[in-house]
Image (cartoon, rainbow, N blue to C red; front, side, top):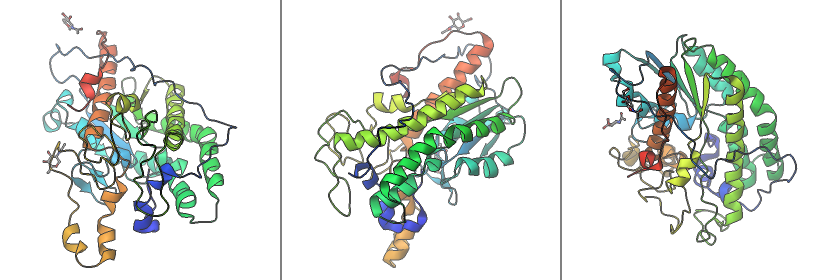
Length: 377
Ligand SMILES: *[C@@H]1O[C@H](CO)[C@@H](O)[C@H](O)[C@H]1NC(C)=O
Ligand SMILES: *[C@@H]1O[C@H](CO)[C@@H](O)[C@H](O)[C@H]1NC(C)=O
């Protein structure tokens, strides 16, 4: 999910207002499908580590996708153009002991994830650069195709010529019609890069931002500009719903693609770990709450590592407001992306699916992945 650069700071800062806008009416017709994963954790197989060598022996690991995959704002920046950060779930997986040391194993790791990438960008600018023989590929994509940027434009800022309701309807129609077809094409082309037989794609969904059942947020606003926007239940629910629709289509596409494609639903854990905004007894804004898994405005990253630094921002910030705006962009853009602890949670859930595949190959026993395994301590 990206916020178009052209909107400038006001747009980025007020992105959050999308979530609380009173104008985001959902028509009752043509409601996309939803996943019903709200009640229980998915059962996972757990690898039996009594074997020699790394549990997950990959010669070639590839990570592709959008800003969620790039880890925008989490940890330390590795690539400024694509906003790749070193606490992205992909980078954490590559550094995980379960895969073995990259140099010792001689593993190739292609991390091509890029903020702002649409599915088409992923096809044309990421998958096309991969060689054949990928043993494991992680993907997060689709959020930019659904057009959150356009929704922000019209519903929040009144930019552009398209009325808000029409923009929302376009997004919903896209989710129902074009998104499944586009995902099918993506997964077909991506699958062709896999090691035949054993190669696997792990495609994730997204996390809902809010606990929508609590009430203490109903009179809270975390918007900076404009009219006071409240985080009441119905507005929280509307935005969550859009994410559930996207997740459902990704899950269905993974199901259609065949056994080499695995859908990774980490959303359930974000809720089970109390990692969303407006969790019980949390009074927003509370951007530095240790268990919070999603960036809020003015929040720090969690200290898995030293907090993310934004290069020369402090120096340049003193020059002019405009330069400051430019250089502060990542700390604004990362709002509603996973914090480092959220990226680590995603990494652990993906890894559990990787272990489940390895267990299947070797006929080993299964065990469920508990919240104890993935929630921040
Ligand atoms: C990210 O970079 C920082 C600073 O170089 C380093 O301390 C940290 O270990 C890195 N994290 C990962 C997961 O590579
Ligand atoms: C792991 O494998 C060993 C040896 O085959 C077996 O004794 C043990 O019960 C297994 N553990 C699990 C959790 O499957």
